[in-house]
Picture 1 (cartoon, rainbow, N blue to C red):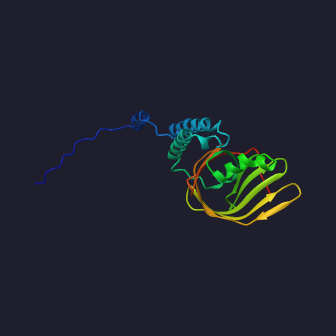
Picture 2: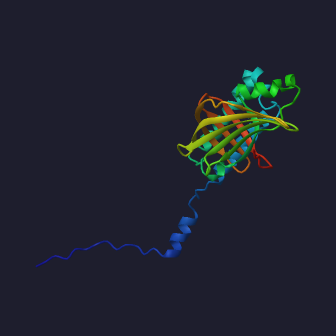
Picture 3: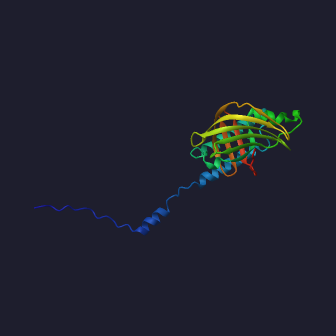
Length: 213
């Protein structure tokens, strides 16, 4: 005679009780990361606010160390973000850098009877173009044209193609020089933070205008 198999009865769980249980679980949100990023970003901007685009930082290793630590903290928070899409395309205005060539021109421009104005990076991802620009108001400008290729979610390769020094009624073409890459380690609607192949850092803001040749 066959024996019957007895199974323990399972309690009935209603959909409403499941919803009630789930409502008490902690919600996973990116808001806490956003708040943290904003806090680190504000600290970074405060650190560079009196550094004259990096001129003062050259003489203060302690200040440089503090700024780099803030950059690294911001980069860590944005390490999984994509910063090489169309949001990279913009006219970016320099806030701070460690690039010695740019800082030399900014500092020594007065020796040539002028002053450095806005220093810009003009990027167009779709057109694969990058212009590095130093303005000398009212009419002067030095800019270097580059071709770019997106290499990864945060890295862009570049190759300089030509350079031009231009005044009101004159222009001097200069030969192209150099290539490399840069990582945009942080990007939002206001600023962009970059580290390049030479270990230099760049912090730029979205300019309130579009620069064109």
